[in-house]
Amino acid sequence: MKIIMLGAPGAGKGTQAKMIADKYNVPHVSTGDIFRANIKNGTELGMEAKKYMDQGLLVPDELTVKILLDRVAQDDCRNGYVLDGFPRTIPQAEVLDNELTKLGETIDFAIDVNVPDENIINRMSGRRACLACGATYHIAHVPPKQEGICDRCGKELVLRDDDKPETVKNRLEIYHEQTQPLIDFYTKKGVLKTVDGTVPMNEVFEAIVAILGE
Ligand code: AMP
Image (cartoon, rainbow, N blue to C red; front, side):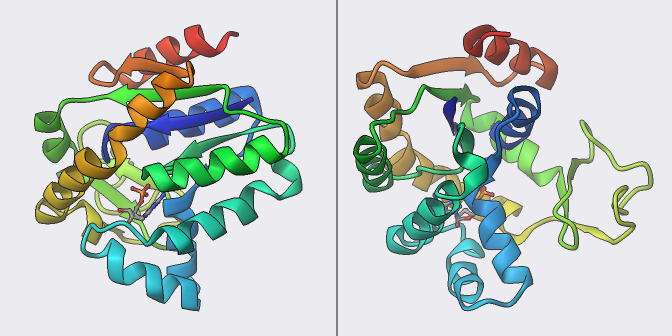
């Protein structure tokens, strides 16, 4: 099963993608996570990506497409995957589509987790992340056991640069300009499904399971 998660930054698609990956036993592939791992390890790719990410800009398609295609070519993706944060532009979607066509494959579902802009900025300012192990929290909805400290590894939690309000505004503008056209792209392919992302996380997931099947 090949699934794409769509939705504005902060819509909760990452959380849903992880839940889908667990239930349906497919890898969760997040280009954002791959970039962050590269930044942490100080790779050349990480250094290059960081310049864009810190400003809330998209990493150029050439870089992003390459890391994604390398990732989905790995063995664990043979029976499918859930893509979180890719594609984010029409050219990215077209490259993915062409690659899948070559393999005689298609995307089964593109799930749009729909949340209005006004909810997003509030939500993002409450996010906290552990830069050491990648765990994410929300001060109101998914708080760590001890304030400011990662449950998983005990390191300090931070508000990621790309979750700061100014950056979030940029990211939303970019989302509307560059990523929202994908809704049309996948509607035309007949695979788009929309779920309401404003309800509690478990209800969003129930709506997704109703689409994907038990
Ligand atoms: P995310 O964790 O998905 O919110 O991604 C964090 C940041 O990584 C984004 O704001 C972009 O700068 C970059 N990024 C992740 N995925 C992509 C993509 N498909 N295309 C371009 N940039 C991306």
